[in-house]
Image (cartoon, rainbow, N blue to C red; front, side, top):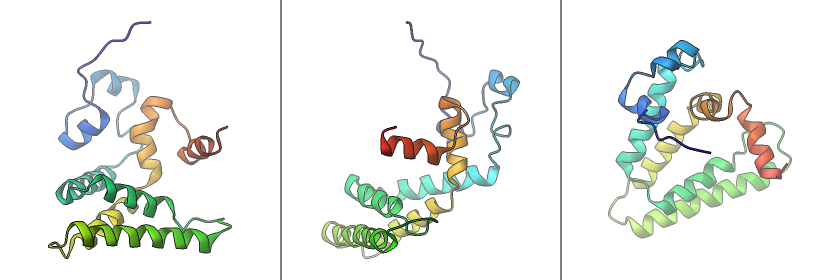
Length: 153
């Protein structure tokens, strides 16, 4: 079993730098247009990443932001809505306390982090799946993959 390292840019690098996609992808229909990702979607991802880089999110802030994203009370069919709402509140509160403790001079940092979070929510999960998972694992429903990972099926 041999592996070969290629000099092809990753999908993320192509999005951020505007590098044209490989000729083979264009021929086989694997281009961005073929997977149904619009320029607007790509620009939203770029804007989100630029915002994150400009804020220079720390590892702890990232962990708290993940909690705020994962504990989403807005999803349909949740059974423990109040519990999930309280977990999200705790994530926001912990983030706010961390920011006030570590970044005392930056009174707008918490707001900047929440703005970055709102920009992430504007990016469609199917778009992320198309761009970053489809080339690796094919066409799948990302929610199903996450549930399988979560429940260990």
